[in-house]
Figure 1 (tube, rainbow, N blue to C red):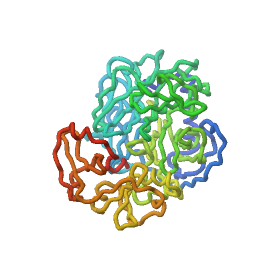
Figure 2 (cartoon, rainbow, N blue to C red):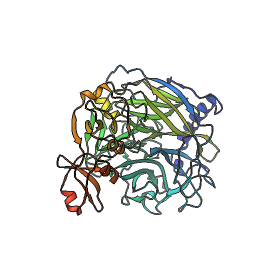
Figure 3 (cartoon, one colour):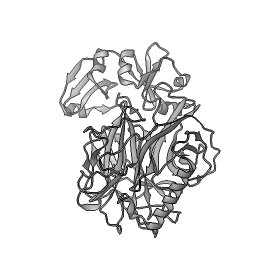
Figure 4 (cartoon, one colour):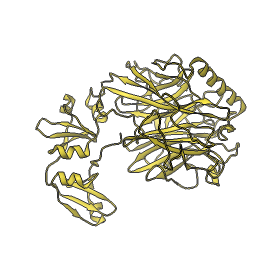
Length: 503
C-alpha cells in the first residue's frame, strides 16, 4: 500500500500528483544521460521586488549509476530524504516503513556512506535502520515521516511530520533531539507546528514536510500547510516559513509576510507562501549569500534562489534534470548550509541531491543521487561574502603567521601547527580580499588554557574563553592546561569556539 501518511490527501490531489509524476517520467527516462540545464517551467512564487538576477552557470553534471539506498526487507517505499555531509561521511534519514518497527506506520530510517553513489548502510548493518517511529499516542501515534535534520551547538535536531492516522486532524510537525543523530528523544508530547486551518482546501494533509536551516543563531523552518491562508493552488500546495532562536519555536517566533519577517505570538500565522510546491527542501548558500529552495517540476528538481529576507530572486533558477517521484533532499552541511569544497571554496558551489525515482505501486522508492556544480561563482569577491564562504579556513598572513577566518573577522595564529588543528583547511595562497577584513584576536604561544568537567577545554585570549576541539591545540601552542571547576569556566566571557564549522 502507499504510505499511510500520504493517504491523508484527497483522491483528487493524488490523481494530480500521479499525473505530474507520469509526465516527468515519460519525458525523461532513467536510462537517459543526465544533463544540467536552465529550467523552462517556473515552479515558485515571483519575487516581491524586481531584480536583475546575476547569471549562474551549471557544469559537471553527475548522477549515481543506480539506487543508492533502500530500507531492504519489507520497506516497499523509500522517499523524502534528509542528507547531511558530516565529518567525511554522508548521513541520510528518510521516510519508509519496516514491518519490524513498532507501531505499524511510517518510520524514519537511517544509513550512512562515504559516497553519494552508494554503499549506504545502517548502524546495525542493514540497508536502513529504523531510528524513529510512531509514539503510540498523541499527534504522532502512528506515523513519523519527512525528516529534516540540522546540528547546532553539538545537538542534532530532527523536525518531522507526525500523524495519528486520523485524516480529520492531518499532519503536524514534531521535534526530537539527539547527541549523535541516531538515538532520538522527543521534545514534549505536542507538535511544535500545527495546521493553521485558516483556509478551506480539499486537501486535508495539514502541516508537514519540514525543512530546517540554522543561520546566524536563527532556526529557519520551511514547511507545507495545505490549510494555510496564502495557499494559491487548489491542491493545497504551499511552502510557509518561520524562524526563531528557540529550536522548539515556543518563543520569539517570526513568520514571513509580504513585508518580510514579522514577530508573532505563536506558529499559526500563514501570511505568505514562498513556493507553491509540495515536499520542497531549503538550504543557505554562503557563497551566494542566498537561500535555495529545491522542488520538483516536470523535468526534475528546480532550484530557486532568494535573498535573506525573501524579497528578491538574486539569481535565475537552475534545474537538476532527471526522473523523480517524490521531493528532493539537498546534500547540506550539518547546519543546513551548502557544502563548501575544501580545495576550491571561492570558485564553485556543489548542488547535490537525492530523490525517489520510481514507484512500484506501493509508494515512491529507488533513491538516487543527482547533482551539478555552480561554477565561476566568485564567492570571495567582497569581504562580506568572503567571511561567510571562508569561515573556518586559514591562509598565510602578511606577518609570516597564519590568518584564520572566524565569525566575521580574522584570528591571527602564530603557529601553523595550531591553525591546522582548528581550521577546515590551511590554504597555501593568501586571498587579497582578506586585507579588508579586520584582525579581531591573536593566538600567541603560551596562552593560558583551562579544562573543566562537563565543559571541555579552552584557551584564554584577551580575558575571554575560546573553546578548542582537543588538548592537541594547547600542546602545539605550548599552553599549560589548568584543571578548574565548572563555575570558574562558566564565569568567563565567551569568545568564538575555535572549532572548524561543519562541512
